[in-house]
Length: 448
Image (spheres, one colour):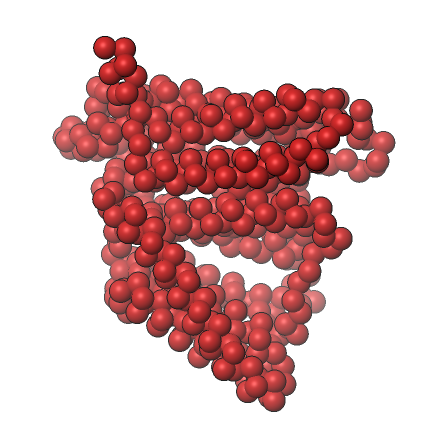
């Protein structure tokens, strides 16, 4: 009887497998890296113990089918993360980062607790799978309560994944040990995406909330991408990049493409872990000089390469890029990404543009093939859960796409104009961490 009761508290599906695989791989890589990185630290053993407790917490979150177990594991995971962030409690900046993070996580915990209480009241069950299958059967009178619960879960997701305006804790956590930053940015912030994906069946029945997810994700994606270009050091750049990538993950969720969002979450986590673990060997950020603004000839041919990439993506993914649904947004993003990618090869100079055009076409097409194959793979393994449901195209999507395109063109052609210096300074100031979390002089850090 006890064994049966314990089994009823867990549910394993492909979302669970993806999350457990991602965090386990990152945790193991971080531990191997930390064996030499943390060597000689007086809290060496406690550091690894906290990592393994955090990993167990994430695994429990991923396979939990009980609201109480899910919430308890979520709380434990965030407490262990804060403990790792404040590795040296005698360091004032680290303590300030921990206080900021715990305040953010406490807010997210309260929001999730309220959402779970509403869902339990509606369904009368603590089983997540039962709630997903029967919550909408409660009648029209429960529709507003379900919408409220979904909005609360979205807010909890925003606190966990550092979505604007809940991003300050993440960009203020850079004084954490590098392995902790890797685990945090590559694994723990993805918990918000997992939370939305777990309750995706309810979100599909509330398209208005999907539009809200799209909007908040777009704002974070734009701000994170813009702030990333302004940062003076590698770790701040990576922090803003994480904010932008989490925003783009929410954009895909808001479009109804939860499988694509999970694919983005998975590969971003692995790549961001590598970038953080390798950040110590970079004396300065290496950026490719495109010679801004690009020549019109280079930009024209880059548009052609982007169009080819978008067509290849649509062909492999079996999607009509001109369909009047949210597929159009994804294809447009692939088009802009392909154009920007081709522009790195087609620099100024007519001769160089023509010379590199065949290579740009091949590489852009190859990029589209890889991305489409990746999305198709995740769509295939998650197909029983039906996580890819294109939504009708709305005015929000059109405005968001136009805003995204205009921001891209502005950065491409006008970002060096002196008349925008005031805007640049304001944007730079808004992307800075909390002053209490910054050590301005060497003696402010306690090495012991």
